[in-house]
Length: 489
Image (cartoon, one colour):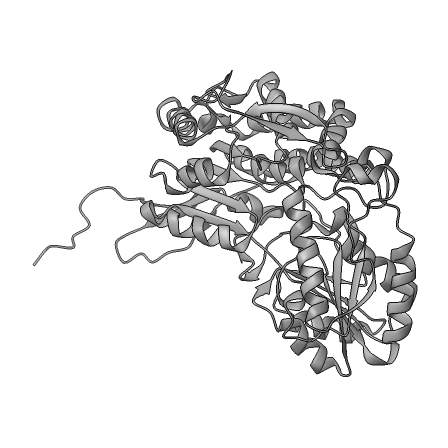
């Protein structure tokens, strides 16, 4: 069911879509399969709620914060249910899903607190027109359309919904058609928390219909999207019609640089987190491992040994790696691995669909390492979005930086070294929006998230995440009303 203007309702067409567990192919839900008509209805509801009704944008920040805290508490109360939904819907290990749910609740709490912080400023200005008082104020953007991917179903929803609602906007939210179940549960929580009708609207459907309508609509004031770069480009082009505000968090092919003086065991484990966490279905994945030549054999040997020991299985059984989200995604990953070997990469481990035991019923991929990769290879240049790493070697710091930046993407990057000065030098040179030193992939609600280059623009999380959903208005006041004497000649 869609949730539009405070009511649960089927798609206008009556169409539905089956949701399956990628670990065994079982049907776990039947949801609305909406089209442009449903999107337009949701947009109209959000527009009325924001402009005509105005209840939510006029609600004082402390009252908005109270509601967001109720949402956070309800997420905590339903944490086990929500984690199981995401684990079955997406395929991820249960412990990772539980971390996502904890972070989602914390995100609502963070923005509930942040919305009460001082905003705007007062400015000392010229008195050429007499005594003036100038200040700025922050206001909600208006109707915000939000589209999220399938790799972190509830968490990605939270990253967008929490700051948008905190700022006083009204939203139309579209989750991935592959993983909508926890979003439905979240909107149940919104309803129970008392969010005014039309403030938050949920439309379930595919990007080609629902997403396209949200991007093109002149009644949408802002659109944010997390997903592939080609889709982000299409959204940006469609948004030009009314010059709506756009936020894009897109693909990545992020470097993970390991210097010879790094703690080897630590670097190996963090490299595994960088490329195998969430089955490698992570936009910031450290999928390009750049290793200093003198330690390459030791590092790759130990990494392969650890990778072969990874457990693979159904997410609810809490393995190290769960199922790939769909057959199409698994086929895409296998195609990358096959073409990499044809282009000269050496398969160190993995490379095949995992079919042992009960995994034969599902969509599982072996952790995969490809060595002897060169800069021109597709596996080095294109995002795989699976548990696959390409390995290259370098000899000097300058060469490592050049190789790291030799990509059209700029989302993330990591550096492993015990030389603190070198770590900072390298991070300063990386053309990426998110960087880590001696770790990889930790994410915090308090810190900005987003990329450079073809990895998109705008930021989520932190103070920047709230600012994305606000407009800044200048207000200048004449402190001495009356004629200013400008036209006296």
